Length: 331
Ligand code: TRP
Image 1: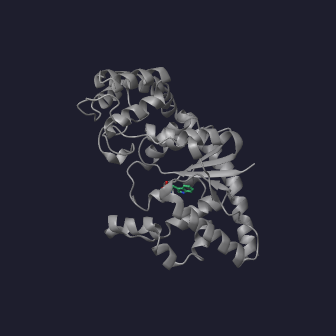
Image 2: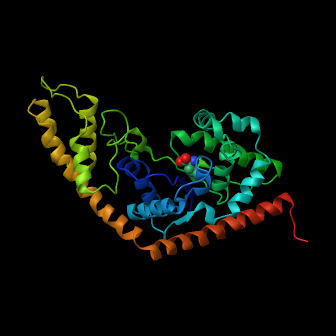
Image 3: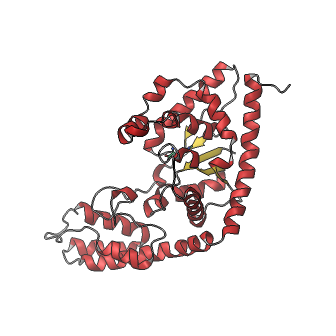
């Protein structure tokens, strides 16, 4: 069985874009792989050295992923800082990570621009920590978005370098997990590109949004003044609403509005009402589960402890072997 691993940033709530982009695929991945999912709370210190309510954020993220279908029995679901062994592997990998190559990483250069007053060593060595996350469980596959490809490439570099340096075929060289066609790109509601939490108020629909909020957001979505010719191409905002409709509604509903659009008799208000109700039908059960789980501290603690135990079993074994390979011995 392949080992698949992914890190999750403890920032913000899950929106429909996250759900159809990655989360739903995580849920599927668990069936055929040995999966590790962790919340990257050490990483978050690179940008938020004094996080406000880190514990609360981690808890909420855990609750949302559990509600979305991550199964703590099938996967190892843990908090990064509950596996302190990763810090030791990070230290060791840093001894063979060159400052020059770390400085050339795109995300580092971006961060230097964004936070010039806090260019800390953690930012520079972000790729070594990410490599440690992956290599500590000897993962084969890592589902990554475009923005993380360079980090994964660095992980491969570090793994190969370690293997070469110590003349051991020790770390597997991790590859990107390809979702292929199953990756559905979800557009936002503001007529621009994809759904994202940073795109501005009202662009994203979160799994925790209540029905009233969802109706309000959808009703405010960007459209146009309506088609004036048969089969007229759609403007971006309208196209986006149809894309969303295809994801949450039945084919006959989509067909109904397509025909109306093509015959110039569509009323966007009707489309939006239908879209809002179909989104709610989809998100409401998940929202109820989120509320249930996030109010059950005992359950969340149990999940986190179980995950920590499984992660440490796997991680400690790797670090023990690494120490052995390097030549650290007990006296
Ligand atoms: N850097 C990833 C992100 O920003 C999060 C992450 C940390 C990660 N460690 C990882 C992802 C290991 C995959 C594997 O989204």
